[in-house]
Image (tube, rainbow, N blue to C red; front, side):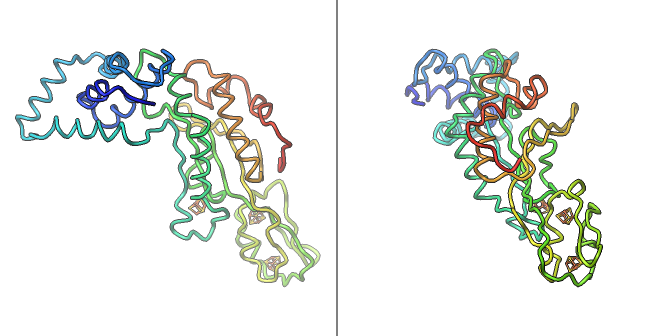
Length: 306
Ligand code: SF4
Ligand code: SF4
Ligand code: SF4
């Protein structure tokens, strides 16, 4: 989105904190889109300013700034202006992809690479213009806030350190165990590491309960004989979770999906918000109201790994 010089200068001077200003920029650009322009003009900045100020007037804000300058923050206005110019140069998004620290710390439970996946998902969300979508769905008389975002939570294994189960879009790395013909030494290492109690040794070999197993991969890493090996590593995909006051667990869409399926679900979830959200409902609100069926309906290719 282009900015008129005079609009950019006015925006840079707005007496707003960095995070509020970042969202005010998105608000001004939304107003330009609403007027079918690809250029932000002063009028858009004025609307963004009014909404960002809320009940606190320009005079009161300027008075507060004067007091801060008098108390020693002599470069305050200049700092805000520089910050404002930087905000116009940088990328500000209304989506966030969070990963666990497993890859960075060499966590022994890690089943998938997470950093490359994060980048791929972020790129997909950019292509889908999620920031513009979230801003445009938002009301025109309320500031965009930090929680008005499309959030993706990725954990490298079912331990789930980023809590994907209670996020609007959650992903776990998973690995399905396979029992091979390799002779079992009955060492019970697999039984010992299986926190889900899914393994028993019978007739000289392991038995795995499909109901109890959550695809954590611990047993295959512990097995010294190759009797249990990974059959397929992939992604558990959940949608519709939420933390906080109205917390709820998400719904599992896929137990062990491949990468293509994961990316297709993300695209379908975004389309579902775009076409079904009532106002600025997030994915969880939409799923609560209409279920997960519309997400599957928007997946335009053969589903695998369900
Ligand atoms: S989610 Fe799993 S891989 Fe990631 S840090 Fe936690 S235990 Fe390690
Ligand atoms: S993958 Fe994890 S939960 Fe499943 S059987 Fe192995 S250790 Fe147990
Ligand atoms: S860890 Fe491997 S060798 Fe040991 S009991 Fe389990 S399947 Fe058998």
